[in-house]
Image (cartoon, rainbow, N blue to C red):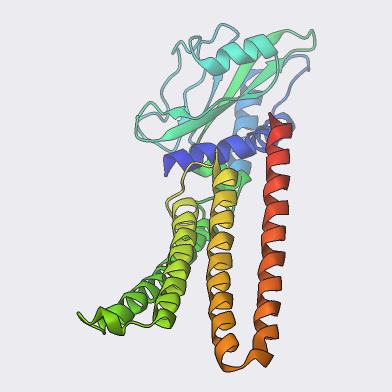
Amino acid sequence: MKIKEIQEFSDIRTKARAYLCFIMERNLPSYLPGIELDDLVAGMKKVSNELGKVDAIYVLDPLGRQVTNTVSIDPKFARKGAGENRSNRAYYYRVIKEKRCVLTDPYPSMGGNKLVVTAAYPVFNDKNELIYIVCVDITLENILSIVHPSSVDSMVGHFNKWVYAAFSVALFAVSLLLFVKAIESFISYGVHLEQIKVKDMFQSTILLTLSLAIFDLVKAIFEEEVLGAHKKHAEDDIHKTMVRFLGSIIIALAIEALMLVFKFAITDPNKLLYAVGLLLGITALMIGLSIYLRTIDQRNGNRR
């Protein structure tokens, strides 16, 4: 999914730029006297071989005009492009302004069917004068797989997606079964509502509460890990899901404790201590959840 790919690129952009610029600096001559275009062409081959997933590579002069044909795996652009004016490209302006290796944001390729990024490396002579700009185009998918192998489009990323999808389906099935079981306990009485016992109502409420808690968990996992929802507010969403899940568990345990209090008060008062122990555990969970919420609020306040 392109949205997630762009967000992943934003997360690893600094690392990607450092890596690409290091590869280009290591293989391309600069700040040397007598640098010829042939020297750059030889260096471009090394860069292409070392990266292995280059979409296109070419050289511009200081005015932004392409002085070599494009080396590309796409036959529509390979061995073409010499003489093209690329002075209106963002990477050209940035190199001229910053006078250092730059990496662009993802943008549509000339073919229009994929996103690419461009690393532009300025070549200076021994007098610190800009003489060439070497540009390397890499698809967004490839730069993620090079710099961030665990990305969503790598082999590991695909495997992780299928694993999370399988767990989501299994958990959803559990949630559905709990829901069906809760409803089934009432349907079994038919129209004889007077036969429904308070105990059955409590048990059904517990099952429904757990079903809702698991469904919220499934929703968060599926949207984030499988569909690749945007991560801008992912941390807040995780906190909300955690709070809702723990809240549902606390409610279910509280109902169970209430049932035990009623049951033991009538049948065996000596066992009320077990119910009290459960209530103390629920209290500890509520205190822990309160501390968690306060910590999150303080962290968000500091970010603002």
